[in-house]
Image (tube, rainbow, N blue to C red; front, side, top):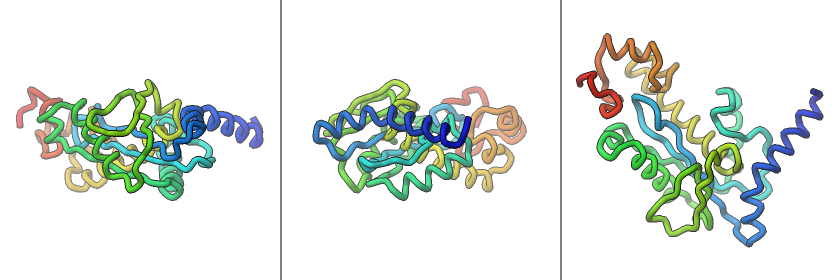
Length: 213
């Protein structure tokens, strides 16, 4: 495939991923916030949500579900998204709260926090899979939204890069768990660290019942 063909394919993909947004723009809605989270599955660390309002003329190619992108590509897109976004914000809920209220409720709380921290109030919200209570803004939950909506995909990238950077910082404090490699997920080396050193202050006890304190 030539460079021109790859670019054309990427432009078609972007057009497909802007369909939800274009429909809302056509109805007179200007500020659409995409919301997504990262970190529901790990054994350690917070759950992180991002809310991103993109400009209507957003035309950066390659934005997609963060899980489909390389770390290098995510970092590149993070820089561009945060530069050109109308507004973006982050919600972070720590492992202690996750243990207290459960991961689903913590995820919703992180998402709500992210929405409330936006400097520009959204007129409509597109969310990956979920809907949120207690927010006085029209919203729509889209299954696999991070692959179908450019706003949600942008939020998934911002959330993923933010959380990965946090876990890399935590690695300096707790190198025995290799958080820089596994970002808190249950890899072999992570479990080996738990067996050898026990749990640290970042571990989700509700995910690790039977491993003591």
